[in-house]
Image 1 (cartoon, rainbow, N blue to C red):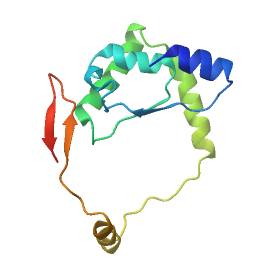
Image 2 (tube, helix red, strand yellow):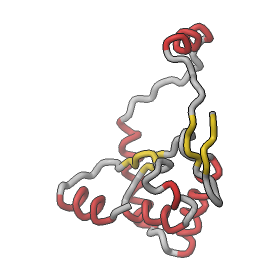
Image 3 (cartoon, rainbow, N blue to C red):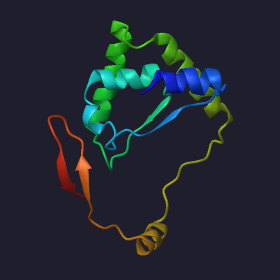
Image 4 (tube, helix red, strand yellow):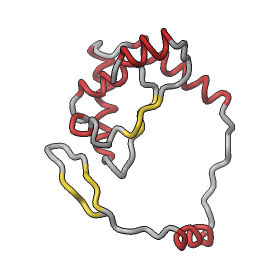
Length: 138
């Protein structure tokens, strides 16, 4: 979320021109602020190219609201179109050199083998929800 870290230090001082990827935004560091439009706008304007969100910590509703915040920010000028274009160009450059692997469903036997090695167990996680949170067993 820091323009000083991402733009001034990482890009200008250190010369990094690659894609900046966030840690999981649903974790405790900023999760309580994800519904605030200013949070999403700060992340984008700081120069973060890819925002990671994991269903373990957050829900799809928050992610969709963050996407809406980006659109609203572009409309009202609180998110720089230039920043978005630069970010898009970096992601496109990365994708142009990334291998394209075929996506296919693993066999039931493979899923069974994985399940026997690491069985799923119920766990308690903090859920990030609009209007408050709480623990949910999943």
